[in-house]
Image (cartoon, rainbow, N blue to C red; front, side, top):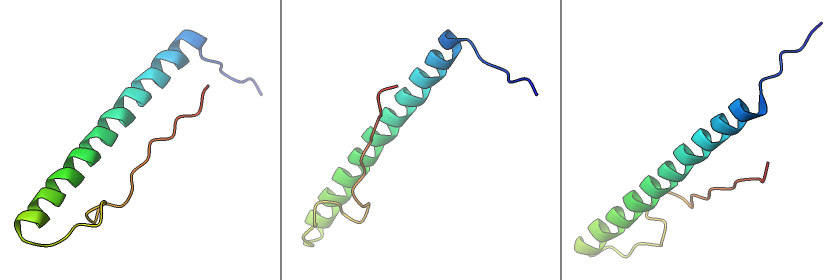
Length: 63
């Protein structure tokens, strides 16, 4: 059985694309959590820091 191996440059490009998307998603989650906290504050409800979104963490392992 032969294995198809992609060129390192293509893998690196795909990795960078995935990393960029993950960073965008993390920023979106932080933005939504901040907006939700502001909304709760306006309603007089004390937020607990994660405002129902949970704690989002982006972990990127060096490759």
